[in-house]
Amino acid sequence: MPDITRPPGARHSPSILVTGAAGNLGREVVDRLQTQGARVRSLLHHQAGPRPGAEPVIGDLTDPSAVRAALVGIDAVFLIWPLLDSAPAHDLVAELAAAAPRVVYLSSTAIDDEAAHQSDPIVQVHADMEALLHDAGLRPRTLRSDTLASNARGWSAQLRAGDVVSGPDVARTAVVDERDVADAAVAVLLAHQDQLDDEPSVLTGPAVLSRADQVALIGAALRRRLRFRALPADLARSRMLADGRPERLVEALIAASVCRPDSNRTTDHVERLTGRPAGTFAKWAIDHAAEFS
Ligand SMILES: NC(=O)c1ccc[n+]([C@@H]2O[C@H](COP(=O)([O-])OP(=O)(O)OC[C@H]3O[C@@H](n4cnc5c(N)ncnc54)[C@H](OP(=O)(O)O)[C@@H]3O)[C@@H](O)[C@H]2O)c1
Image (cartoon, rainbow, N blue to C red; front, side, top):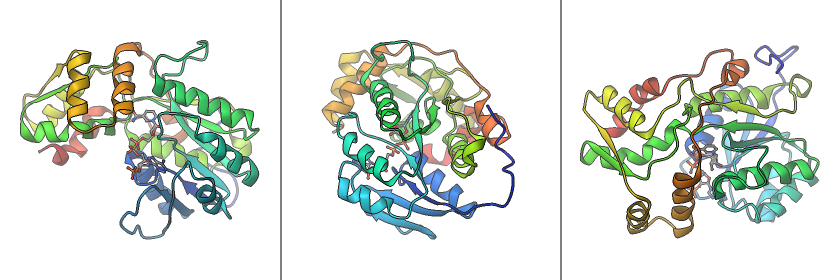
């Protein structure tokens, strides 16, 4: 993988569209792009508070006219596809192919390139999206992210109420700080095209962690003894449905919990793209401790 941490020549100031821009990862990307002097347009699903310097566009990723309008004058797109189905992405991909910006797609480390079918619907969507973008001739630059540390925010209500997080367990994996993924994304978005290769970057944290490990590390940051209680699939399903989560999302999360295999893979791709090693979950927990107390 080429070193893109020191771009040659004068800094170009591209116009970049970020989708999912109000989400955990998207907002980190927007902030960094603005700091680096890029012109940023944020595609927001719903009206959000004003963000100095970022041009907001309200629209649905599945609405071709909204996507077409958002792409006017755009050099590059940081594409987050948060849906549980790739079928509605055909129109979006057609709009991208017509506008022909550079595309950086945020995918998943859980993709098995040798498998005919992926382990669960969430991973299948990412594999399908990679194929759609590739088949449309977009030559996307793909960042495959491991489990984002920011998923732990979903535990904040339980941890404000007590010392136990209950939920479906998932495979151990090298949880990655979303701020590292954002730094890597910005490095790629601002790099010269000829500094990049076509192989996906595989962005992981430095250590393989279970959910119990993550809860314990949040406890260490809070100086509390916290523990994770794994729920059987049926109980986890009924609790998530009772919490008001959409049925399709609940089924996808249960399938991921039951079917996704452990991953022992860690890489140095965050460091190769950003010039510094990936941060630990312990550091993430310290930096976000206030959100859990
Ligand atoms: N979480 C992980 O562990 C992980 C791992 C690998 C890859 N990824 C990828 O990373 C993405 C971002 O993760 P995240 O944690 O930042 O997600 P997030 O916080 O849920 O953010 C997703 C954003 O997408 C917006 N959105 C949802 N449906 C939309 C639609 N139809 N049109 C336009 N915008 C829409 C949401 O807006 P509203 O909330 O207003 O609907 C939200 O702001 C995931 O969607 C996934 O594709 C995640």
